[in-house]
Structures are given as C-alpha cells and as structure tokens.
Length: 254
Image 1 (tube, rainbow, N blue to C red):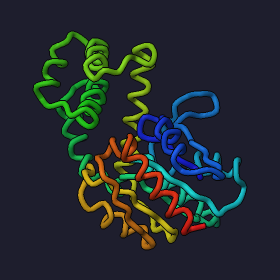
Image 2 (image 1 turned 90 degrees about the horizontal axis):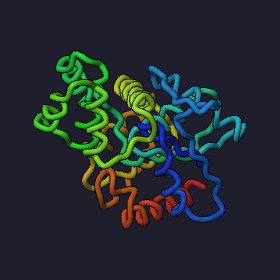
Image 3 (image 1 turned 60 degrees about the vertical axis):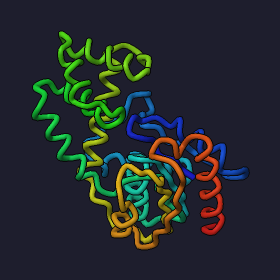
Image 4 (image 1 turned 180 degrees about the vertical axis):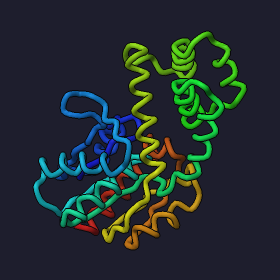
C-alpha cells in the first residue's frame, strides 16, 4: 500500500499507522520531497498526482494499487488514484483518513487573510496558525506588533512548542510549500473514481458530512467511524481502532 504525505510533506503519521496494519503487507510512504531532497511545490493537484503516480509505478509497474492518506494526504491519494486509473490501472483500495473532498470552506478564509495582510509571508504564517493551532485575532495581533516577519515566525514557533527544523529561511520554505499544497487542494475538484473506497472519519471531525461530499466522486464508498478528532485519530488509543478497521477493510478487498 502507498501512503501519501500530509500537508507539510511529512510521512511520520504513515510510519505510525504502518505499525498497526499487520504483517505481510508492503507499505511505502511517499514524502512531499523530490529525489534531490527539495520540497515539492506543485501549483495544482494534477501535477502533484502525476509526480506520485510515476513514483508508484517505478516501485510497482502494474496495478492493482492500494493507496491511503490522512487529511490533505487523502485528497492527494484520491488525485493519484484518479491519475493511475486514467492510465488504465486498477485501484484495489483507497483509504481516506478524515479527508475533505471540498476545501471551498477554507478558500474564503484564505482570501480574507490575504486581504488582511500586506505581506505574503505574514499571510502564510497567520493562516497556518489559524488553521492548525487555533489562533484568534488577539493572538495574531500580538505577533503583528513584532518588527518583521522573521521575528513573527520565530516567536510563533516557540509559542506552538515546535523548535525550528532549520534556519528561518528553511522554515519559510516549508511554510511556502504548505501554502502551495493547500492552494492546490482548494482548487481540486475530485474526479469520479470507480474503486473500492473507505472513509475513516473521526467522530469529532474538522467538517461535517464528509461522506456526502466524497460519495459524489466515489460511488463505491464505505464509512468507518473512529472515536477521536482530526489529530487524535492517529494517536493512541484511536490509532489501534484505525489500524484494526484498515486491516478488516483491506482483507475484504483482497
């Protein structure tokens, strides 16, 4: 099975999930970096899907293929599955872990943030803090009072408890990649995919009625509900239930 990277390009969650998928199954995690170690920054989901489809076929030349992804990674997995299907390949299984089919609800917030900030970097930073760390206007105003974007980023990383992964220049590069990947997701219109698809949805998901949205493009959709929220679904003890649900569904599709 091929597990696609999340918004940041990381695959740590894939390694955690793989531990609970049982023995005897080859699992590949596809990171959001190229062969030179540079972050992928594709302006649209189609371009990202073609890159990953080529990677997958270099590892497994012919289908059937099984793919999965969490959050935006699930949306990317759907795009990759659609690309492989368009190339004439069979998709045996597609697992969407609390993934949204439609990001239009975020598009308005993104446009609002871009209008509010004169600096593109500040807009990227503030939208990330809103989306992933629940910052409100008071928290953003405190950062906005700092003298420059580098100070804002450095302070924000300390506030959210995440040490810098490298220099501030590298951190801005990572943030820009997330920004571009999110913009690609915002404009993505899922194509119809006639393949066995399972939506593993958290009881406290980020959005309501995820199944209704996915059913429009995935007619062969099944839903598994996992107790937790968008993030805790990949942590103990929820990941045990997620792994078990995956194993049962994969066994049915075998």
